[in-house]
View 1 (cartoon, chains in turn orange, green):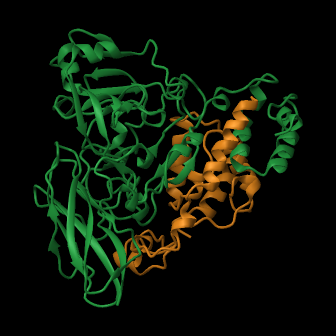
View 2 (cartoon, rainbow over the protein chains, first blue to last red):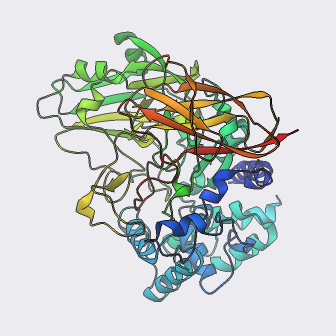
Length: 137
Length: 427
């Protein structure tokens, strides 16, 4: 057990010290504007994406205790439900529709063997995800 | 790491593990460590005290990132990391600069570089099922060495709007190492492909994120016609060295032109199927696109989703690095690579004026089919100021890269948007 922790800590040092996106942000990069996510913009207006303010999905300051997930109702439940399989990094990258979150939940349960929590907890987590990692709001 | 802290890693009291877990998180403040601890949570009620779930004992591979240079880590569990475009300038992508796409955890055999007793099984719709050791692969079939592009199906996902789910790759989930192995087609022919063969199914020994050893991480395949073309290889070496742990040790497939998920890592079985393969991540939305163009952000009935096969034509600018300063009025070499899921690229054009005018770049032939091709252009920025270089590759059918994302799809695959870099010209 102890050596797992040592290994992990070594890996973590790489993640922290590695060249994260922060290092690259200072450079001019025309691709960053193209990765903007216009939350709430009409997806059926092709010009909306082009004029949208760039929001490359940079993580808001999150709660370190919950893997950097932003605080809010359901943050703790979301954290403990999700990190059973994967880290919070994949969650923080998402900006998807409500429908897609429902689909992802079903896929995780049916195809990936996720243990489904009580219905109230499920509702809380999905609301949290749809609130914080949405392409709709 | 104190002994006291270490002892809290495994809940001793299955009734009340939460307090110790929370205390530990607060003690360390390390989110990755917290993630490892959190892993036990959904199952904790069923665990005997002191039991260590398999996943907790298996490595996501993060510490191996010490051997990579300059990659951007998108996720630590599963491990996913991409390479900034300017670090992809090499003709042959070195290990240090090859992207990492893990669907699960790195198997122990790969971490230990232990290929002892490794057997590749070829079965299903074949006349003679084979069980081949690595030595038998090397001795019974002709060895080939080729540069083959490997590109994640989701490379470019970050540019789709609205967003699509998955790792938000920009342009760097691609590389072109040199692979050594045997032709997949030779091995399949040795086994004797039956008339009933329709598809291949590929299997490896990577470990599911949940730690459930019975669960398939990923098992994809290709149409038998693609598998029998002479390009695909069963590789044991990359750039002249045994396959690294993150890239499939001891055996992997490289099936060029298709999304890299068909190029199974940690390969131990190829099953020839009499129907489209239905392994993990072949079905549902995984690596599938709508059979017809759809409006952005809309949903598609499952039966209208088809398997993504050939990747579209694409190019990147690898030099200079975006944002570089250059001298106004003096020629500067701009260069990069171009590749295509159908084979060779026909031409590359570059624009200095936001796509108003284009000039043709010099394009080198591929050293072998499905290697990326070097392109170069000498550009002179007429006066001081801000410029963008846009690059556009065109395939043999005259189909080129779009200036904005191509047709939207629910999982954000096959985005071959033109790559642009900024150049600042100084007087």
